[in-house]
Image (cartoon, rainbow, N blue to C red):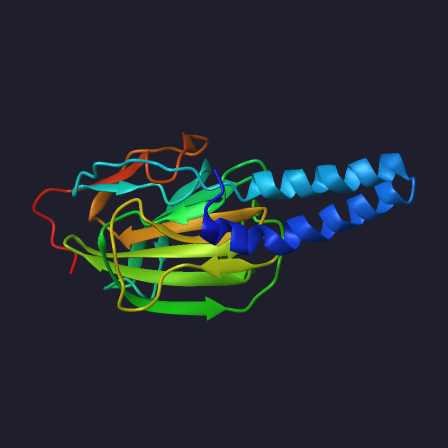
Length: 218
C-alpha cells in the first residue's frame, strides 16, 4: 500500500528512473529501458506504507520500526531525566518497510535534527555519528526518545510530526530513506525489555518493552 504521504516522499525516486526507462524503450534500448522501469518499481515498493491496527496496552512500548534488534543496552541520553537510559535499537534493511511509528502515546515535546556522517546503519558507530532526527515524546509513563538514524544510501529522513503534536502508540511519525536504524530510549529502570538482540520486530505491532508497575518516569 502506498499512501499519499509516502508517495510524496517516493516520487523523486520513482519518476526519474521511470522517465529514463521509457525514453530508453522509445530509443530502442529495450534491456536498459526495462531496467529503468524495474528500478522505478523497486523504489515504489520500498516506500510502501501498510495499514496496521493496534489496540495499545498503556504499559507496553511498541517497536518504532520493522527490522531486527541490534542492541538492548544501557546508554547515556541527555533528553532522559537523570541521563541514564535503556536503549533498544532496530536495524532496517533495504527490503523492510521504512515508515517509523510512535512507540508510545504522548505529546511531542522536543525535536532536533543532528547533522553527521552516513556510515552503514548496521555498524555500531552509526548511533553516535550518523545524521539523525531526534524526537522526545512525553506520555503518561514519562518520556520516550525516538532517534531516526540515516544510512549511507539516500541519507534523508522525512519527519511527519511536529513539536506540540499529540501522537498515539503506533501512529506514523516519519520515514527514513533506504537503509537505516531506529532507536528507542527509556529512563533506566522504568521498563523491562521484551526483545533480545537478533529478534525480528514490526513497527506498531511488536511489544518492545514493558513498564514496571509503580515506577514514576517523570
